[in-house]
Length: 329
Image: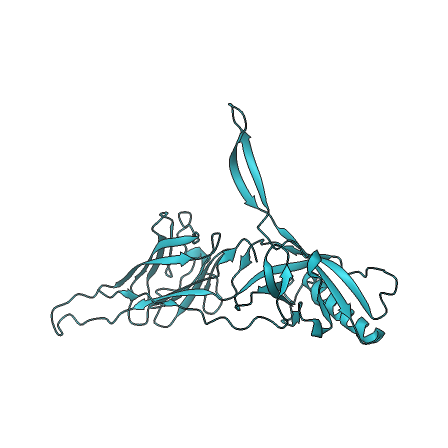
């Protein structure tokens, strides 16, 4: 029976932190910071040589996620917690901007303001693209969060400021309040070598690839993975054996009409938001076994999961990719 090997791809060793020496930031300790705008331009935030730097004493919003608690009165007094809902977070980030003369200061001020407010402008497809705030520790480990500019890029109107220096206290709104690891975790499974029935001894090779493994989520909350499936396969089934949640994808379903996934063909399954795309971009979400399908996530800690590819053969493979999510930076 062909089994799938189960190497867990180890992320590369952390590199040095972004430019600038670590500074003490409230709620998280010593770290460096940088911001990447929607165009991909990186702006260091803790490097004084850049011409602007963070006023660390005013930074807030880097700690634990804010939650909204729903409770029900208890007949014997008090209440019982019924539901916990993570809320968007707001990060306050003061910046001091300076220049060698007035025009150099104005140029830097305008460029930084544009880098943050650009998150509010619709892109070519009409969607707004967030910026990314990244916090790096002295050992090179990093955590990121997607941000949208909210308010605050105005001068402080203090006497003498506005000529060659000024500060702005900006608020950044985060629709997902959790920090993520920029280095994805990957679990790769693929078929072993299929064996001839007669050589060297009578053996049986199944048309199903069956793999049980344990996937560890080192984060603080559930992550929603992405799956890349490489054919051949006639039916794809992924099960979280710890919870019993499962979903199947049938490439031959009427809503898809493709037929079996052939050798080398690929389909990507996202769990949040639910999305299934064939390699050419075709929408295959109708191939899921609705309404029974549950696109499950990985809880913190160890998760027992099962990969099953019916109609598998040489080259059949599954890649599970996820980025751990954390309460704090």
